[in-house]
Image (tube, rainbow, N blue to C red):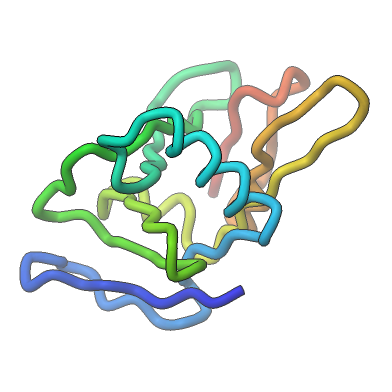
Length: 127
């Protein structure tokens, strides 16, 4: 697992290595599998939106075109993870994992910034 970062000249954040987004090999393989279903996809996006009973929620999608202010992390040389600077403040140092238990398959966000989560697991809060 590596965590290289591409920063464009418009990137307003200087990211120290400990704050990089990371992904386990299982997560990388799962995301790449999802991207193969859409040949136009060039990456994976994580955004944070205000919602839910704990305040914030992860929103993920495939990337078709990078935004000018994207921070782009490469946990693997085949995968680009995009996050906007505002969302990045909530996910600094986060590791993305993928769990498969029985019939359940899900992306898991191991986020060191989360201070509480709702019982359903859909939203979280940070201090």
